[in-house]
Length: 161
Image 1 (tube, rainbow, N blue to C red):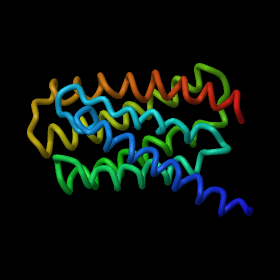
Image 2 (image 1 turned 60 degrees about the vertical axis):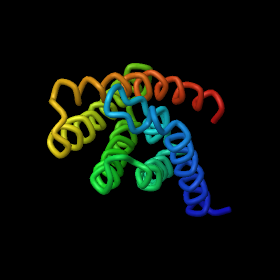
Image 3 (image 1 turned 180 degrees about the horizontal axis):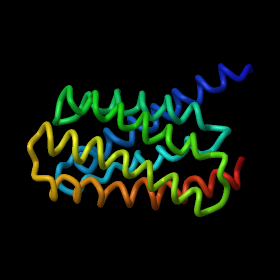
Image 4 (image 1 turned 135 degrees about the vertical axis):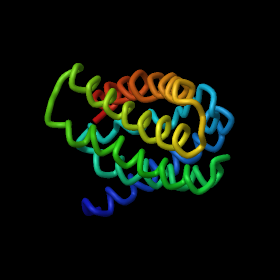
């Protein structure tokens, strides 16, 4: 199988996993109060060069599909997908740096991207949720899913690939 087919297949697989996790865990995934989107642990996969491009496309498409079910409508569909694109792209761009610290920096920047787009732009600016509440809510869940679980996923992936 050529490289483009492998990347496409892996992208679709990541998108499906992201969407299914998000939708099944809907109350956690779409909550405005302490949102924990466990599927966001897939965002840092862009850091791994073997999965990098597929993770970028997969998590972006996964957000697009899963946010169809969001309480926040079109805005979440658009902003969430853009957030996932950049939150996966940043680790991909940092993949040339090696070591645990580099992985933590990549996941932290990915987390900050989600906080900026979803916490500030969507929740605060568009939905009018107070800034402290919107940032705290997204930060809480994103630290758990992206930094903690995402870093663990990257470390586990290194052992297998």
